[in-house]
Image 1 (cartoon, helix red, strand yellow):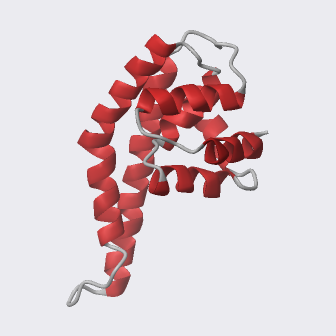
Image 2 (image 1 turned 90 degrees about the horizontal axis):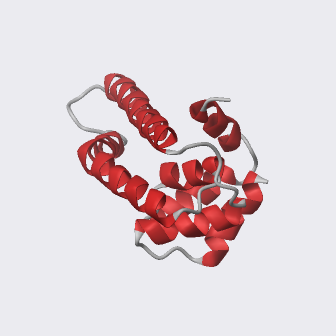
Image 3 (image 1 turned 30 degrees about the vertical axis):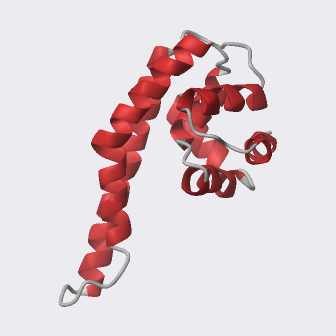
Length: 147
């Protein structure tokens, strides 16, 4: 199964979207990096460091600017028509998803098969490589939701 298909399937599981948003918005984690690490069963620190650096670069270049535009379009922007604004916001949301997909496919190309890490082990290693603290409980919640 392609990584994008796996991520879409994972997001359909109860608790996964909420756990990902908490890790992203509250704890500063990159959910694409976390989900890739689980899928690839990554525990290799060198690979995770390279993946985290690639993710940081893509986040600066594409993800953060696109996300900021999408969030800015959530509020009314008089005199811009609300229907047109919300349609544009949906277009931007699609662009954001395309950027996330490209990042995931890039990360997937960096890994050589499966690394053998269990979900929580991969999440902890990815969060460490990301160099931002993530509470063990928040990572465990995502690992449990992913099954």
